Image (cartoon, rainbow, N blue to C red; front, side, top):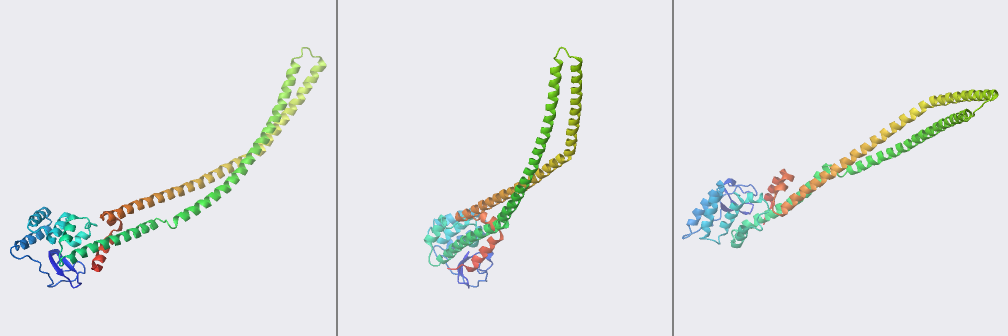
Length: 338
């Protein structure tokens, strides 16, 4: 790990995998290293730092940490040691990799010690990384807010509620019309039944009268021939009247039956139509419930992403904005300066 000043005027750490290019502007760096090596009697620290950098590059974190702690016994106020300890604690192989981990610097003890012991050569390096982290968090928060709105719009939150409301209003109007029509049909059915019941009731009343007359007559002990003839004539006449009335009622019923059947069919048809409209309204209400659920789910996911950012965790933000995460990092690297 070298300290260099790039042509973009940034003072940075240059790592082996940077391949001689500035990780911020991506331009090649030539002979612009700052010599911050130790002199005798601390010259051995230079070799130890090189060994630590190799271990960090290889991801040998325990080995690197052991060497860092050993050197801290000799030079506890050396900011670059604390910075390397920060890299090891976050399992990062470069400064740029730290910026993809999350907002991790502010409360990190190693970073606090790094700032505490930094000299004028090192201060610009750490200030640049800290500023980049702050800007990345700020841009990610804005992107999260924007992407949440995009996701909700994709569900149709701007148009669907009005569409659903209009559809329900139309269906409710149709239901209202059909209910009125159903009322009319059922009224006619009730009138038909009432008229029919009256005819049947009248017929039954006449039968009762005849039955009572027969009962009264049969209870008489003695009947003269003349009385018997009168009774037979009476019964004969009323039987004829009774038969004629029955035929008349039956004829009237037979004639009105198709009308009654038609009213019943119309009643069934209207009822089915109403049920169909009600089912459509229920389906729309289910769609509304599903949309509300999806919106709440999106809100919860983005709340988690936003809160994660505030707490230094980029995990949920990465999941929500995907490729934009890397773009934001690259844009920040290109533009951030101190």
